[in-house]
Image 1 (cartoon, rainbow, N blue to C red):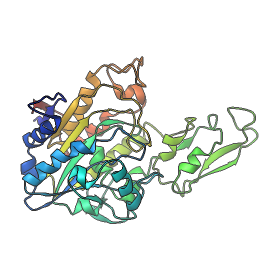
Image 2 (spheres, helix red, strand yellow; image 1 turned 90 degrees about the vertical axis):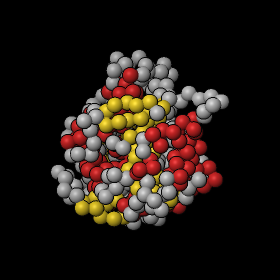
Image 3 (tube, rainbow, N blue to C red; image 1 turned 90 degrees about the horizontal axis):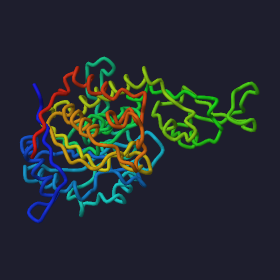
Image 4 (tube, rainbow, N blue to C red; image 1 turned 180 degrees about the vertical axis):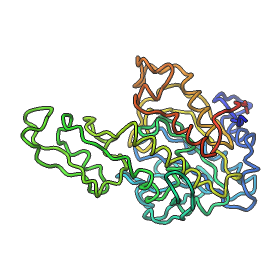
Length: 381
């Protein structure tokens, strides 16, 4: 049976602003049924890395907050700390970044709470019974909330093909050890012929798992004068893949066919863990705006790959992500984007950017474990 996915475009006029349309969308999708009266409502959002500009505009969050309050809930904005080096690795930096990016109480109308505490260790162990995960470590603020509303900026992603509702909840709600559990097999491999020993990967690693060493005389090298190379200590590596994203020489990669499918499966299982006990009290809203080719965890945002599309809402995280990906793939690529002229860009935007990632695996597995269904009816709100 198909799930309903509600949709609004971005057109506005004197009779109805975009803020009005967001309120109507949330209410059409059933936010009043999701929110528990006098209950704590976790609004799971990505506050954006400092320097990034693609995350959801804080002003657009306030209509959702107002709808939660009207439904009788007590909303708060939340996200969990990151594994990688950046500006959201602990609660102090995280909240500072959020406020600098515009997520102040005066703008959004709700307090900000870091889900896994000051150092990423504040979590709840949620029992599971899946193929990979028998338990999930979920940030306390999400695990103990009465309801959860996901506000996801839909974009492409370097490890999962795209990031939408599933990734926002599964990866984003996990504590630091929960993120480590999901990344545990995403082990970087060195492509020696590309490595120039620049040290960017070493500087990016938050776990001191990479060092620069002398290159063996018979080792391949891009230039004869290059004498150093990176070396990864597998005992220290947590599989966060930050070094892969950081390397300017494309000298680090993962096993695309084995590592990433299992990574997606663990992320899906963690989504189920974060929603456990709140399955009937969850709502997912995807913003299909400034659709960037990479995650909002970067300290920059590349030009959008397609024009802004609209905003979707659904009670089903699988259906809304499927609908979001379908709408993105239906758009012509922008000439100003990184996929301009790519032969795959018309039919599969993910393949145009990340040739080896099977983004559909995320949705197939999510459907197979009962998280939702891929079939959907798109309803104009």
